[in-house]
Image (cartoon, rainbow, N blue to C red; front, side, top):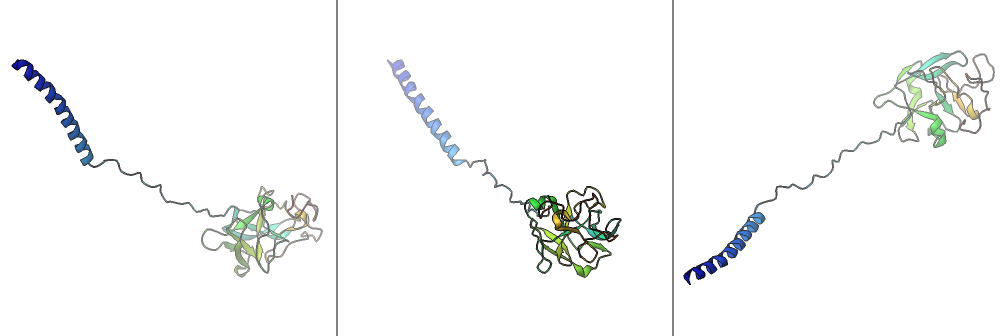
Length: 200
């Protein structure tokens, strides 16, 4: 009789102990702080676009061209052009969209002024290009290079569409050859033979 009572008491105590142990474990878990830290917000670093897609020109220089005489080129020898649809009295590039894919603005250096050779510093300025960067001007005219000129000294964009011209050291457009004839490009294109104002 005593054995049966003791067994029943053990059976009742065991589940109670398990319940108490589980409760203690829960309390301990709730009391202990979480070791997982909140996810850090993404870095706020931003890379601001320079907006300077174009021909970077650390220098503008006067170069002797056998067809056009003294012309302006970049330091890398790329021929520089001006566009008749731009205006010198209110410097602004009017070459946008499809035009800008062929005629790259000559961009100012990221810091400081371009080195000049044979060109008056007072004639060189800046305007805002269509891409938002700083485009160099000469005598107020925004300057460009042509995608078709693949080597230094080429001027295949000359007279394209009757609106694009190589530039003299003073910023004037060159419409005649050094020999005094019609302005032709190095590839033989005559003035006005290009299709459309953009020369494409």
